[in-house]
Amino acid sequence: MGWSPFLVNLGHHPNTGQDTGKITESSPGTEEFLKTIKEIRNEVEEALKKTNVMMKKKWDTKKKSKIKRKEGDLVWVDATYYSMDQPSRKLSTKRLGPFSWQISL
Image (cartoon, rainbow, N blue to C red; front, side, top):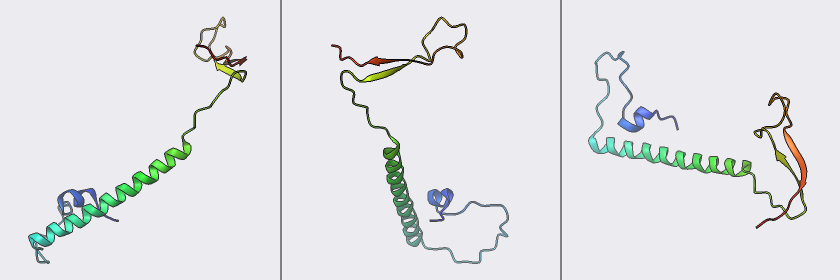
């Protein structure tokens, strides 16, 4: 790859202030310039698509599937944010249970 965002957007590298002002190369024609810019943008677009596919694949592997419970399963209830009769949240019970899972309508 090796393309800077500046080159992709504007078609040339930024002026660093160290140029001597002498032109050593002939300027490319307009058609050649546009062709180069289109090639660069196509490469960048392909790289972004490839990155998106890789990121989606990684996300999907880490994503947890929903837990399917049936009636009678034992579950614990997270009690971290419930107020208890403890003087300090740090010392209070973190989980309650196990409770039997019941389907209610």
